[in-house]
Amino acid sequence: MDIPVDFATLRVIWWALVGILLIGFALTDGFDMGVGALLPFVAKTDEERRMVINTVGATWEGNQVWFILGGGAIFAAWPFVYAISFSGFYLAMFVVLTAMILRPVGFKYRSKRADPRWRSFWDWALFVGGFVPVLCFGVALGNVLQGAPFRLDGDLRAFYEGSFIGLFSPFALLCGLLSVAMLVLHGAAWITVKGEEGPVAERARRIGEIAGLASIVLFAAGGFWVAFGGLGFRIEGLADAAGPSNPLRGAAAVKAPGAWLDNYGRHGWTIVAPVLGFAGAALALLGLRAKSAWMAFAGSSASTAGIIGTVGLSMFPFILPSSFDPRSSLTVWNASSSHLTLFVMLIVTIVFLPLVLLYTAWVYKVLWGRSTTGALVTNPDLY
View (cartoon, rainbow, N blue to C red):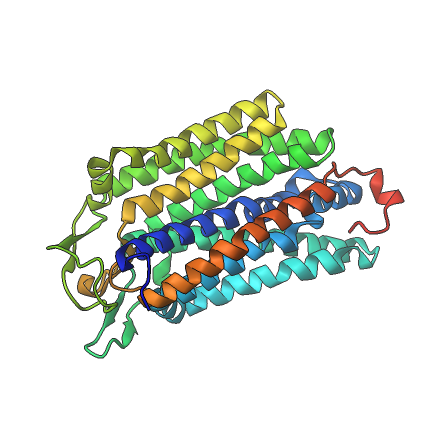
């Protein structure tokens, strides 16, 4: 079968698509988790907390489609990455999944009983379900930037040499805090868009402003650390972009402090991503102070996309570098599925991704409207 798109191009297309899906997950389910992390702090009464929960109550399940699509795309397009990351980070994955399971249970059970202690327990469960995954996702990205401690033997068997505690290095924790600040800002902006005006919105604006400033400071600190903290990997020699998928073939990766900034020198347009990360957070701050809800949400969305895009563009073509044995590093060129698999997946994506986008847009249109405390009395479908 003649495939009309060459292997190297398909690999780049799927690298970009996986990035888009992960950004889509952060933009949609990100504000859900940000709202969960904010719940105990922006809402003081039971009515206020129910109103906040209902700002995401109608759409949070649909938003998780992006999480499934992103995970599925990594599994199908980059099987080496999926296998090594899930086997090496399984304890961290278990923590994330446990926290995420608390969210649906919290949404469904919280308002089933009027007991204040019962409701308070599930409020904190929703907080854990929002805060812990966001922190862990940031810590995971920090570990990817540092390189994961794994190696491959001659038969491509993977050996993970790290520990669960070892994941929480100072740089990884900084990335985790940046992730929390970024999505708390996004959640605060969403509450001002979807919630009613009043004390809850005012508290969300105040916390959002702190999170916005923290995002800018932590993003700058992360950039400084990447530039001068000894992080980075580089491929020595000419990589075979269309060669067979075998991480141990061809050009070898080496540790190269500061190399994560190489792409900005080679391709000037990539600077758009970090600029968007900073400018978006600044726009969100202006929107919160000016009480312009949509400006704040547009800014937090741009900042989220820019910060995640900065990681992907800085690391290209690396996907999962190895700190233990850099020659085992997984890149766009040596860890993908076959040429035919990537092409078939692309056709399926071209057909179904627009349907997902159209359905999502239709759901938001149908369910649009501000969440209010008054509606809690008249609408039996609310949480």
